[in-house]
Amino acid sequence: MSQYPQILTPNRDNFRPYGKIIEYPNMETKGRVRNLWRIVHTENGRTGWRVAYLVLRDRTIGRLECHPHSDETFEPVRGKALIFTALHKDPGAVRCFVLDKPLILRKGVWHGLVTCSPETEIKITENSKITCRYWKLDRRISRPGELSA
Image 1: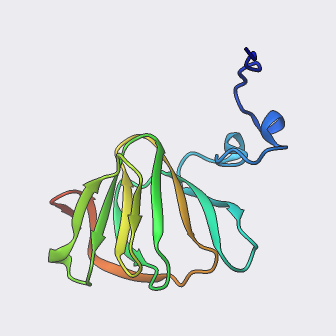
Image 2: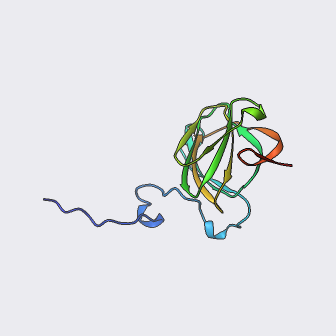
Image 3: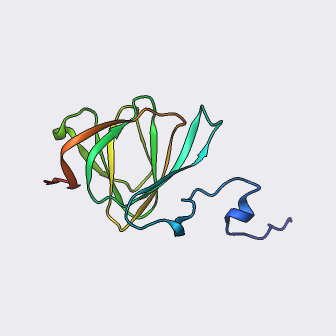
């Protein structure tokens, strides 16, 4: 019978030879008010896909965005969040879902995120190059069914 090797907790140093830990870089040095978003990995730089890490702090949103040529994943890591979606620029068509499991949005789906915790951390994967379109809402969305002036 072979014996298993020692079980380690991965950190940046001991896991570096094998890959990367997906986390927001230098979290300690950043402020505590605005959202933090950084690309943490790309495949081949110009083509393929990239991985980003979002520290979400927004409690309201005033716009939705879409990427007409890229699917996009939202994978919750820590905290609780809501994801707002719409297929068309119609305020009555906006739907809200709890982001409590990994989701893939199709190309061109309008979306926006708000946190229900002080912060929510989310891993995002998308095409390496994306087009971002924005839809400014007439009123800010703060919670499902509530609009702020």
